[in-house]
Image (cartoon, rainbow, N blue to C red; front, side, top):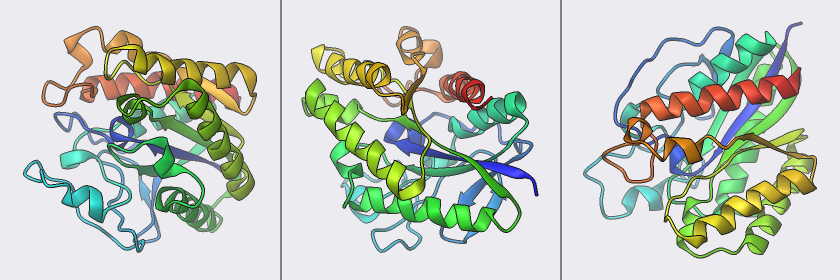
Length: 265
């Protein structure tokens, strides 16, 4: 039986996907996205993700006219905003090309979330675990399970709310340890957060992410490319400050996916 690697994609809006267009939606060879609400493995392509309610039923997609906070209240994870491009396909395209392994993407991200909303005992944590366990069971119908990894892009909201380095390090370590216990997570991969608020509050989160990767072998830094992308308008969404556009998402996904593939090999 062929092996498949499970890759969880977690975090906030830049992992949910908040870009300006649907740049491409070609199916990624040898890769699938697990959809929790339909319990299916779908050939992976843009757009990705699911809108899931707190009762773990299917929610509704975010629209540009929603300014009253209703969507954030009603959904615990989100699909790529407006059905546009997300990094997951480019990530998995690079990963499968480099490793030759089948990849099964489990997307569980939501914009504007702080890390506290993903901690054990929260709805955010519960959907990561429920969705991943369901993906593993579905995958077992066709594959032997190989690696189980997480790609994490989150922390912008923690910078906004002045989370300290010490607090964020403790929280992300608790999250990692819990996922390791509950899912058998092998590596917690970090796509390092960029400079969202553009002052020392960002540095607290950036330094926390850097330090856990040095101090704990369960963490791995997948890319620091955000620091480069945010220096030019070429890779940033002109309609949403601090968010990467389709080209930026594809570049991030390609570099992070290649890094994880080298680790897997």
